[in-house]
Image (cartoon, rainbow, N blue to C red; front, side, top):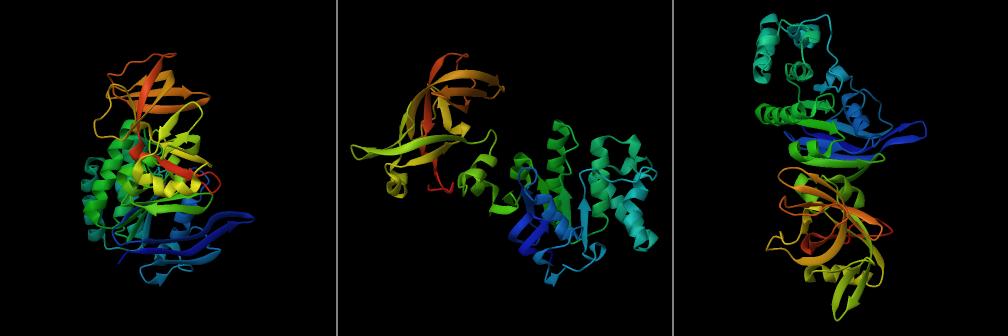
Length: 366
């Protein structure tokens, strides 16, 4: 079994708490992604598992074994770094074989593992080249191949795609997902890119300021974020937030934002009644804001008008930057929708997918 457990793990650097009482159980063969902004503690959490940093408090288990005091080379893990970390004077073959040679693995076994990994990654024809003769994407494959030949119980990947161009990142993340399925090994992956997290992960751990905010599947994080931070971090473009007051009128509940008033759907009212008359934060994703008349037929609709500030034509959709009062927000609308900067357009919001957050605690109400 290659399950990994963080049991109330804390890491302090002087007075700075990089990881704060983190508990995560990573299942065997899972693809877990640690995601969050720079400085949130995700790379530190990975380095603690790898044995590159010492734990301040708590325990880390690989399988049933506590590895706090186990040397990195004895933890049966392999790590892929952001910088590739290839030896420039060695060929691709020797870079991939180097760790096995140090372990005195039989030569025939080394040759089999290196060639199998190279074929799997499509770099079999590059084994005689030096790293300087390779593109960025090829170097990254070599770094991954070097990890594969170790046949570890756990793969650790620290932002391995950040040095690649946009097109190659998309291609390589698909290759890593296929590789995970093929190897059937536990992957723990660190990134600040929520698109990478959403497209690759079995589960995502969202971190902020060293604290685990939420741990769940990509779809649940998208549909049911636990707080404003997770709601704003997951999804691209990110969720729009509006300061509103919940007011009751004629037995109906509305979110009053001053320049707009949106009726809350019936299935959300019971949870929101304790906040009647109070200020809350309403959140709605850009894809749930539609330009009339191109509105889906099956939504719970509430209307508002807003001024167009900027439009970005994406081909299959338009990103429209809008203004209501002094509040800017963004909508992803049908490419047939019209509207130029300065125009006032009518919008239909899908209130079935509106989120409401407590203004003080920033946790989700509904």
